[in-house]
Length: 127
Image (cartoon, rainbow, N blue to C red; front, side, top):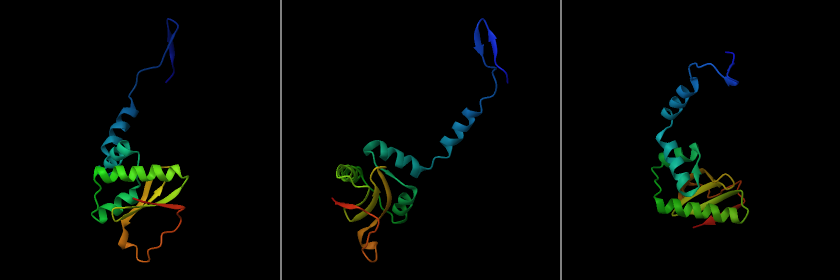
């Protein structure tokens, strides 16, 4: 639609607002896991990839706020040492973390890794 001018004020015609409908649909499509990850990220700055959330759910692992704070401090410590991809060992759990993105890429109980070898990391933080 064309814009028009009234009293030297440029006006756009009024029409349906498709953006409002799309925004409502986006809110409805957020899963609980995504909402939880967003809330945890706000709390301590660390977020979880979809893969990591699935691995934690599959293994029935839940992190309390104390563990989340420890994980956040470990990621900050790794960042302070210039690490990019780090292994964080915390309370019997192993987390592979993209340090610059503050994102947990995957997570597992320590004994679950069959050969106890972690590749493609440049450092480790043991909490």
